[in-house]
Image (cartoon, rainbow, N blue to C red; front, side, top):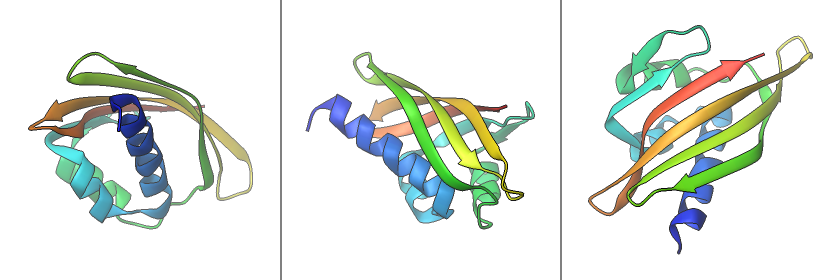
Length: 117
């Protein structure tokens, strides 16, 4: 499978894992030194991110749009837009940037940055 197809599939897994609180899948695709910038500007490491994702998601219908995967050798950046439904039924949206690195032949997410509108 090409790097573009692999990363596109990993991006779908990432988004699906956010919606379903799939900690097991995140343990497989996040690097040990993963860092995430939350929408409030706080920075959490892998352990902190996994703790955040463990409870059932409060949003529903999470979808990504306008996905742009840029592969640069053993490094890739994914930019996309998200839409979802908030617990009170209002529509929500945001953007994210995920940074991926190929380590020992496997693509792992090493960093993420999330914004919400």
